Image (cartoon, rainbow, N blue to C red; front, side, top):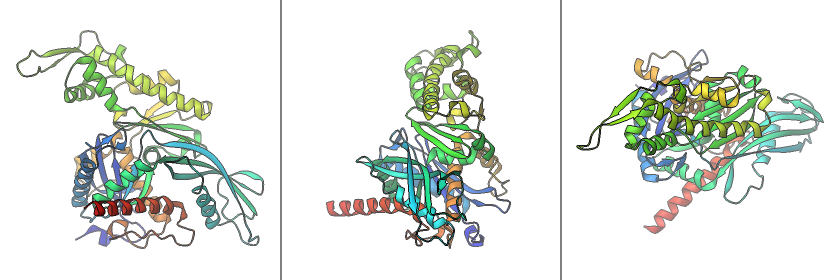
Amino acid sequence: MDKSSTQDKSSPIVVGLDIGTTKICAIVGRRSKNGKIEVLGIGKAESAGVTRGMVSNIDKTVQGITQAVDVAGAQSNVDIKVVFVGIAGQHIKSLQHRGLITRRDLQSEISRKDIDKLIEDMYNLVMPPGEDIIHVLPQEFTVDNEPGIKDPIGMAGVRLEANFHIISGQVTAIKNIVKCVNKASLESQDLILEPLASSESVLSDEEKEAGVVLVDIGGGTTDVAIFHEGIIRHTAVIPFGGNSVTEDIREGCSVMRNIAEQLKVRFGSALADENKENEIVCVPGLRGREPKEISVKNLAYVIQARMEEIVEHVYYEIKSSGYEKKLIAGIVITGGGAQLKHLRQLVEFVTGLDCRVGYPTEHLAKNEVLPKNIYEELQSPTFATGIGLLIKGIQKTEYMNADQPVVRSEKPKFESKGKEGGLFDRLLKKSITFIKDDIKDEDFLK
């Protein structure tokens, strides 16, 4: 029997799709009775068509998405039609802006509709050619010149203002992601910035309140998100990640790429001084050639050079945000790259801030559905973004009061209910238009 049919409407089944540089991951889940996230299925596939967070080969990416979704669907016994997709890449930019509306109805209190109207207005900002707004995130509100209000709903007031954190990306990059999802016979319910998703799965509310930097070290990119007083203050995507380290090892040690990756994972260290001089790794030679001996300390020097560069980029983003002195909770590193030995110590040494590794475990419910080995694998920092996309998807579905489980709908309903759907619908409508345009072009060429 399909598990989705037994699920009540208050807890819809949602799918998060993480299209990364090294892996494509689909995670199916729902909110359990105690409020945590219950994962019903997970599918992984190698990502051969993504470079530094951006789609570089449509067919290979579609193949990876289809493979990951098929595995996740079979494991969870759910027919997956709609997904929440992560977006990253060097093209991502963020800016601060201020908006205001004057309310005509003086008798009524400020409602969710007023805030959605303010947010909808921000989507109409004139952006540079080729860029589009992905997220509009309210920070503090001002009601009738009274500043510093976090939630104005229910207050009386005429003039409603807000500071916004606006995240934009290249139209072509957005279009390519939506096209890949569509070609895999899926619909994109929403695009979510990956560092925002990762922050949902590994950061606590206390850390966001105190001031914290999330650093998600993926294969192709390193994502940065800075929070203070519970509000996102700065986002950035750095175009270096674990693959940059692997390439350095390949060149520095003159080995094949797959050998370089194994050396990094099994013997890699971010601090060369932590390794002994006489430790040697023996690598098999190419077809009839002698085996190659590599010093573990020299390997660590190669890794340390690149990791220092990545951490210095992160530190630059922290300083340019203006929140360097306000980060009580320090830095939380996550993603596949966070598993590198001695990386925490290197981050603390370069930035002078406290550091911990973020695991997406505190939001996961104990799981009887998944095999034990898969449940244990899910608790790795590698899946922080995928689980974060799932959490964000559940939150947005609950916010929009979906009438049916998202994954069961043959075609998602994009019409907004009055102005209440304005928060998510605009970008989505644009993305669907892109797809329709593409299909027409292809049909015409045929």
